[in-house]
Image (cartoon, rainbow, N blue to C red; front, side):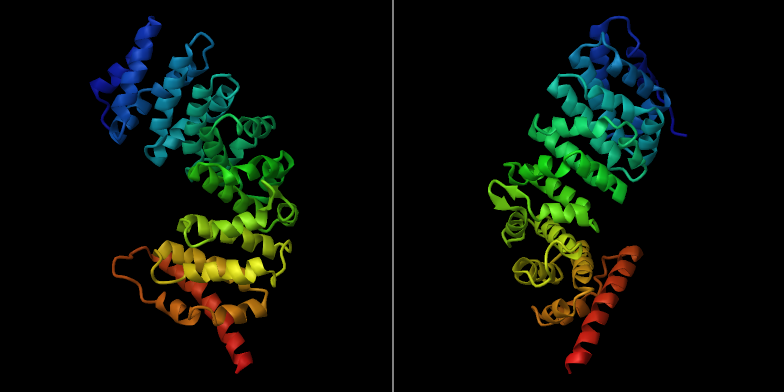
Length: 353
């Protein structure tokens, strides 16, 4: 157990001061004290700061500024260790923050959403907590129009909490497609990127979503063409790869034909490009996995891929790991993916020759 310092205790004690102004200043001082200080965060959690902060956040008599500062401190505590996240979840931070979204103050709403985003992207947070109250998803949809920050945080929450076909259905039924599609042309890169990630998790192995996506127009342009533009070489790699995933999943779900030009001339070459040795290892793994998934059922795509940009030679390079790579799980993932991919191509080449 970490040492509980007198300074940490002083911060918590100030949260109970009868003077609201002193409480506010105490929360602000606590916010400044925990920035980048995981030990201080752990100490404050051990001393019971979280229940008091949540109480102040939910009190109707608390000023908007105090509520917002409490949400900011809680968000900072959430950016510590996984144990911190577990403690926050155990203190029922998620329902408290979701309740906070009902207030009209936009700055407070953004602070709550930022904290919720931090909590939900942690692997130790049960994503089902987002779906417990059936009023939450439609309310989040309604908040998408409030600001670029609400758009970024909400779409990131959705993309991390959409793990099952049931989750896809809930988001689909509450209008995820029509509410998120316009965000793909947002002036904010972060918003565009999170919206794109949303569509990739919504479309994965989901025929209903994919069939709907193929007919969606964004500012008069078909959604598939928006994805194609996002795969252009001048776009960030993360965007190219995620857009390629969207089109891959739509294709595998039967919404786009395997011989469609957006697959043969755009998606396939983009994924092959992701396999080049100039890319980071994680990008290459993700590119190869997605390429394998796209090609798996289609011999013609396998044939085209095998003759594209020296793919076989590029895949062979995957097995020459740089000395700096020590993550055994990543290496196993690469080996498994490439074994499948090379197997497809070997079978194909044996048929051709």
